[in-house]
Image (cartoon, rainbow over all chains, first blue to last red):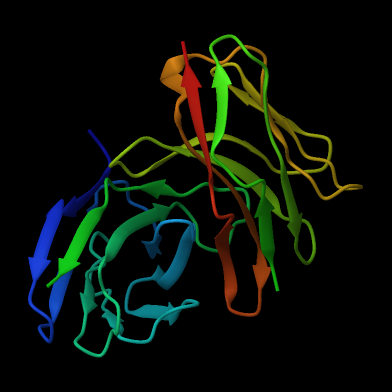
Length: 115
Length: 114
């Protein structure tokens, strides 16, 4: 079955450590996105990528980094510079990044808890 | 910039009641509009979409009409079920300086009781 796989579902890290969240898709989608979800704040865009080897900052990129070396993969690193990293992280993809009528497909999310 | 405003939740209804969740937007140009649903502990699933003015999106008994004159995309269902309990997000995709991306509202939690 085609889809987006995020792993792990739950992740615990100590404060000050970097952590990388995995996102893989087999939908042959060009565009991929990372969102952060906090209670009562909806989804906020961290980074997005419309083609391989290219990505742009979203609204809350500080303290995060990404790479897009393969079309299928868009890992997100939460660095120690992110002041409040505990959140639910959602990865998404869509067919054509520049077309406006295409919806995004979401993974199941990773809940990161920093202690 | 682009933005989406949804009604505050939680919305609590009895089974078989009529549902309306309001959504209004601000965007440049002619955005596409979407409703997503999120069940507890899961990612978002597309519920319905509309890509131009006066289009009506529908799925699983839910409907929403793209109203350009009022910049709205309200979600409706004639008879809700307990299984409809979830968080509903209104979203738009519009051109911005850096390409186009999805902008979401803050979500509206729906609780349906027997």
